[in-house]
Image 1 (cartoon, rainbow, N blue to C red):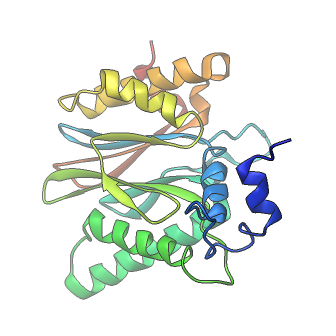
Image 2 (cartoon, helix red, strand yellow):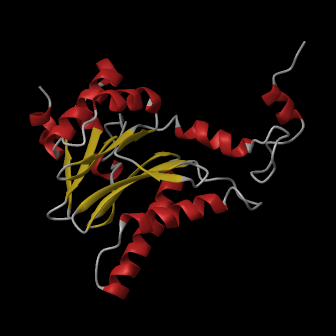
Length: 241
């Protein structure tokens, strides 16, 4: 009986370290981390004509948890926000480091940091943990969205530390299904308000009977103000018909 290639590699120990390539060129620990990311709750980011937007599914069902302590849209600086999918403890560490970098930039230069600078730092950190022994990769995919000099930017990094700029993107659970909807219906001329309606419509189709407004954390930054605005719960009712 033929044994699947992945099981052969496990038996031979190619998945025991993030630094060890399998014979067919895979870093198995990195691929395991990518599977973990797809178990995390989904987030959608959009670049709109008047700013940038992130809508994230908090997926918190326990009524004993204080909802405000389970935010999925994180403030990096007043003009930059982030959301992530994967292991929450890993996410917290990366966001903490991003916030420190943003404050160091503000103290040094007297202004807000560009979103690309945040993305590069996080991507470098994630790549480092795929190259050196003694530590596992960060099991995190990250959306960074922000406004700089009156223009909105959206970046996504994967587990390996690779990143790209996007017009719209999704991470986490059902990400491929959501991306197909984005490719079909996304329009870069939509406003932030239209973007919120659009993303909530996508989540309604994906989650079906599990769709509840209380699940979602929404953050946006306009090109004009460059300040993070949060919406959740009752604030979202006007965006859903």
